[in-house]
Image (cartoon, rainbow, N blue to C red):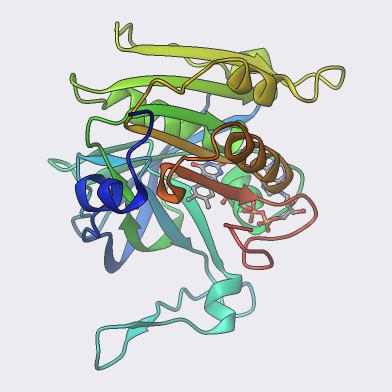
Length: 275
Ligand SMILES: Cc1cc2nc3c(=O)[nH]c(=O)nc-3n(C[C@H](O)[C@H](O)[C@H](O)COP(=O)(O)OP(=O)(O)OC[C@H]3O[C@@H](n4cnc5c(N)ncnc54)[C@H](O)[C@@H]3O)c2cc1C
């Protein structure tokens, strides 16, 4: 059978799993590296252990920046039902980033920031120096490795999450990745693995559809346990979602997990990640 029915798929592969760990911890910058034209890598020490499940696909976290008016980091609190209470102010000061590396023995975390012209996080990262601090609300993983055939797609903002995932891929997993970067220096050397193929593209105004075309040119109909995962700018995310749904109309909704990681002209919090 080409694709499992939705319910079967959900029962077998997409069961709800614990996904979030709220810790409200402080990260302190311990090293800053300029990796490429687009990427700044920041190494942090964390004042509390983080929960990072090795089976998470593309794990991410929520950073919380100091309020520029007070210089203070105000963490969200839990209500009596253990539900996180997030004010509008906290939302304005929070940004999503991916785990690029975490060492639980030293409690050190690596985040790669794609640099762009304006924004709370990107400006902070460019000025960051050893000793600077930022809050972390918690870590999260929406999906887990479950022997799916993984199709990972992303622009510059998803390079860290896709690289982390490919570097931590269980040996039983197969993955195909399509990644569009801003500059050729942003291309990352990944460990050679016979189960993984990566197609890199450099952004080209004359080929605006190169990533979508590359994904759509491959026929995945014979994969009966497939997961299309994506992280990218909203219009590209929408284009990919529609193209994949049109080409594979019988695919279960949960087999397509494409998130708008950012939206042109909008700050995080001003748009929905799944629109
Ligand atoms: C789950 C998840 C994981 C993510 N992981 C990473 C990661 O590891 N590394 C990473 O760099 N990003 C990552 N992102 C994307 C990141 O959260 C956004 O780029 C975020 O908007 C950056 O915040 P900011 O304060 O710099 O800019 P904002 O204040 O949110 O936005 C200011 C302006 O910058 C523009 N902008 C935002 N991001 C970009 C961009 N990448 N390129 C060009 N213009 C942009 C916006 O359109 C807006 O006009 C992730 C997003 C999600 C949802």
